[in-house]
Length: 247
Picture (cartoon, rainbow, N blue to C red):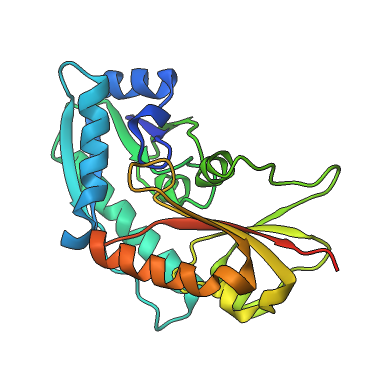
């Protein structure tokens, strides 16, 4: 049985890696690094930079290509099949190093929040002994960058996705939401004058971009800034918090 270690690495800043995470990287015999195409080569580069920073003698690295996700059979079925395909890529990469007993993956943010690595690990056969090293989430990095508390006193907040905002609108019974995995800027579907936004891209990295204010005033700026940044870097990771404005 192999030991599979999922290491949260924060949002791309090597300083986000905890002491526990750094020790887990040093202890790994093999590290799997995903490749997502030429436009996202920087993402593999960030992982390599982290490994170089925390190790004197880097462990072996196995690269694997992320398969494309099919969308013609419905969202949930497409994700389920995609996870199967990624698990197969993991197994193929690990099989090339039969002597590696401790295998690690460097997970963006934290493995527990809107990340599929634990679900993919559960599909491996035989089942590995899986360990999770927590990391700084994109949400934590965003609220720190804006120096803001996410919740009002005694009040809940909801973490959701852009797809759910587009499909279902503003959720009931909350005044604050954090939106992840939103490649379509789904805040455009809301009544803009009703909300304030705290938006960030590449949060915690040198490329960090932050915009905040009444949504009706800054929505167009966010759209243009996001488009320009994606064109410049070939990829973008962003997240935002919305709060209802008092009337």
